[in-house]
Image (cartoon, rainbow, N blue to C red; front, side, top):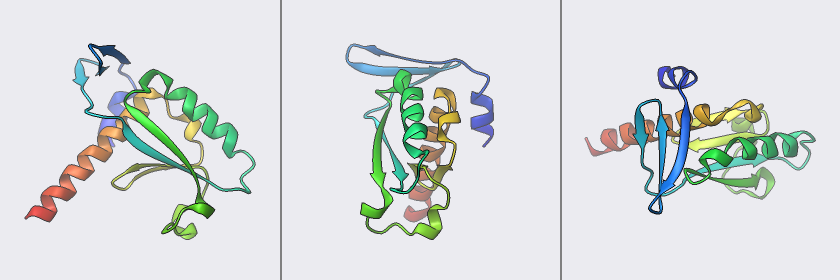
Length: 131
């Protein structure tokens, strides 16, 4: 959480250099090996979800090569419990990092913060499983 609040005040920019995307968060450079998948879950009876998802997609245009959005209807997705999702739409960054509801409010810095938080959580889980 500290990472996300710290990122809100720092400028985020991404550009391609020799086929590799480099994102800068303040003075830190992030070099992704491949785009990070973000699963966005919606429901067929959610009336405002398409507007939220479109706005979220627009917010990721500047970091498009860092993230890959996968929009999924929760009714067509196996192994998802409706009780665990709650409010739609849901943006799942992986490793337990989830944003519910007003995902359009996440700017590129907040999205990168969630991606980094997910990577950090994944690394911690792998270390825990190895020990």
